[in-house]
Length: 495
Ligand code: GLA
Image (cartoon, rainbow, N blue to C red):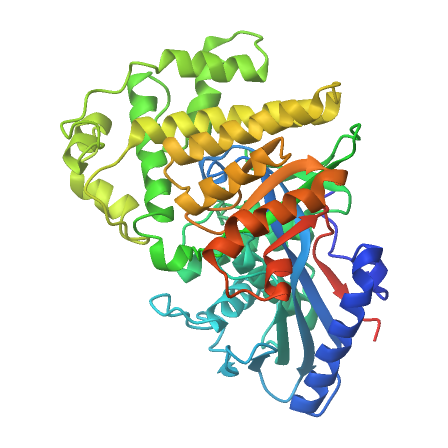
C-alpha cells in the first residue's frame, strides 16, 4: 500500500463515513462548527479527523515487532481548527464539559511544549501530537497560533484506542495548520513515538489503524523492517459475517495501571527476548520478533510462516529455568542471571523511563502468548485470503484461542471480559475475545449479520441488565453495537 501519500482532504462526509452514519454525523459536524463559532467568534478553517480501532487479532505483540490485524471504526475524534499569525498560542476546548478549556504557548524550537506525564490531563494528548509534529518541522520558525474545538466519540479506556485517535487527530491538525509536508507514514511514525510522552510505552498498532484504514478492509500492519500496511479484504461468507463490539464498561486506563499492567508486559517480553537470544546463541536482542527472525534464518529451512513459529515454540518448550517462586515468575535477580545483565542495567534500561511495579517477571507465559498470538495473526490473514467453506468457524476458533491465551498466559483479561465472551459464544458468536490492551474495555465478537440482533440482546440481558441495571436504553445501545471496517484519518473542509 502506498504509505508516502498525504492524508486526504474531503469536502463531503460520505467519503469518510458509511452511508448509514450520515444522518448522525452531519448534525454532529454542524454542532461542532456552531459551537466553535460561538466560542471563538470565527468559523473554523478545517476539521481534522482520526478514528478509533478494533483489533481483530494480534494482541500485545505489536511492541514485540509482530504484525497485527486491526480495523478502524466509525467512532472517532474530530477537531475544528482555525489558525492565526498574531501569536503562537494554542487554545483548546472540548465539546464534553468534563474536559475544561486549556491554553498553552509554543515554548521555542527546542522544547516545543512541556508535557507533564505525571499528570492525567486530557490536553496532554493534544500536546503529544503537537510536539511530535513540530519537532519535525525544521524549516518552521514559529508555528501558527491555533483555536481548537475537539469532539470525541471513542469511549476513554475502552480498548478502542481513544488516545491514539486524539494524538493522531492532534498531529493532523498541527500538520494542516502549519502546512507541513508530512505523509501518512510520517504522521503515523511520529504519532507512535509522540504518544509515549504521556507515560505509556505503547506499540504502533493503534496509530497505524487510525491513519491508514479504509472502508471495507481490515489492515495488516507490520513493523519490521519498518512500518508497513496492507489492506485485507474480509471474506464474503455464506451467511455473511459481522463483527459486534461490547464494552464491559470496566475502565482500563493504561496510564493509571501502566506500571503493573501494560508497561510491565512490555518489559517482560523484552527480558524474555534477551534471555532467548542468549541461550539460543543468536545476536543479542530485546525484541521477540528479532529472535524469531534470527532463529528462522539460522534454521535455514523453507518452512511456511506457521511452521517457523511451531519450530521455535518446540525449541524453547523446556528452555526456561525453574523459578524460585513456585511458578509466580522470576525475581529481578533471576532475570539478571538469565540475561547476563546486571540488575542495575536492567533497572536503568527497562524500568526507569516507564516505571514498573512488580516482584516477579513471568517470562515463560508471556513468551508463549506472544509467539502463539503472532502465529494466529498469520493464520487469520491466510484464512481471509483463502476463504474456505468453514471460514466463520476457523476465524472464530482463532479468536477464541487468542482470548484464552490473553487470559491464561498474558493475564490481560478480567472476569467481565470472560463473562461477555462466554455469553456471546452461547448466542451465536463463532469467536469472542478482548480487543486492545484488555484489563477491562471492549470485546470483539464474530457472528453472522442475521444473528447480530440476537447476540446484542443476549449480552444486554445476560451482562448489562445484571451488572449495570441503571443504564438507559441509549447507554445500552452505545455499549454494544455492530461495527464495519471504517476509513482512516482525513481533513474535512466541506462546511
Ligand atoms: C494498546 C496499545 C497497542 C497494543 C494494544 C494491545 O492498545 O496502544 O499498541 O499494544 O494495547 O495489543
